[in-house]
Every structure is written in C-alpha cells, then in structure tokens.
Length: 273
Image (cartoon, rainbow, N blue to C red):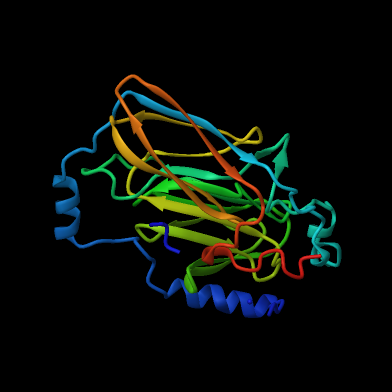
C-alpha cells in the first residue's frame, strides 16, 4: 500500500522544559517553502471534483480484544488516574469497526486542492482526540492540551521523530504542518497509552468510520480507483472501485482480528495491562 509506513521513562518537568526549548530550535517540517516552490504550487491547476459518492461500512467478524484501563493509567500520580477509561485501540459495536480511515489511494488525481482550515488534535482526559483523522497535504495541525497536567507531544513518521514538544497545563496550542504524505503517529512519553494517528493525503477524498462503522466520501470524480481502509491495529485492506458521475457506490470492508500489526503502530497493546 502507498501509506508510508519506546522503554518508558517519565521525564522531570525540568527535563521536559529543556526538551521543549530545544525543539523550538528544530526545523519545523513543512512550515515553510521556497518562493519558487510556492509559486509552482499556486500555478498548478485546480484538482478535479465530481458528483459521485462512496458510501459504506467497515465490519468486524472476529472476536475483538477486550479493551481495559491501561495499568500505567491506574498507577498514574496525576489527573490521568481520575477517569479510569478503557483504551480505545479497537472499538467494535454490533460487528462494526470504528476509527478506520478510508481513502482513495494517493496520487490518484492531478491538480491542487484547496487546503482546509487547521485540523485539531486535543489531549482530553489523558487521551488523544480524535484517535485517527485525515488531513490534506499542507493542512495545518493544531495540538491542544485540555488537561490539568503536563503532556508532551511526540510524533513519528515511521521510526523518525517529526516533532517532540511539551504542552504544559494552560499552554497555548502547538501549530504544525506535517510531512506531505504518510501516517504520523502521536504519542506522549509521560503517558505511554496515549496514541493518535494523522493520515496525510494529497487529495480530499477520505473519511473515518464512525461508531456504526459507516463512512461517506462525497464529490468523487468519475473513474477507477484503489480504495484503502487503514486501521491502526489491523493495517490496510484495499479494493478496486469504479464510480460514475452522480452514482452512490456502496462499499464494505471487513476485518477479523487476525491481521498483523502495521509497521506504523507496532506493539501498542503489548504490556498495556
């Protein structure tokens, strides 16, 4: 598939403040570009929009793993222990799987699509919200801390750190632009059960399955495409689809729980409880 594909030490506040200061000096990925590159991007033709809709659901046919309260959350010495929330890696209701990002494969379209306003990743009750989302290449990400405790936002593209910054209680949001493509994993070195995923795509034809497993992608141009469904625990499923103008095409994906962990998210449940 074209999606690109940590011993835990609780750092002291002093160390994290130093870390945050050091990270301010790192080059922010995608935050700037040369005038020539900007001119080339603005000169690119507008990306095509259509009138077709891809609509469907993601099913789960196996026995999902039991989601429990992470042990380190139970043992936490800060506000994270106040709400004993079960982990959210696999959420299945009525045989439907939540938090699957469904998209047409990257590089399926020519042209430039208008970049939407910033997307948000929040830290709420010591969980990243949302668990997974898609953004368009060049779209800004704003990371908030709504908790009464210190977090640090440690993001990875594969094994490489994208950015790593502390977010103290009441601190202003962090605004970033991510690499132009790939799956970026968000973690917290202080609270290691916290994970979130942002999938960066060069077009806007993606959606995330809800609690009922349903997804919908509108304004798809007519054509033949590879459709991808990515779940952070079970990896990628693909299928070929053909849509015509004005059509609503019904699509279904199915996971059974035997799928191997994807390279983007190895070992999330290991030792969690």
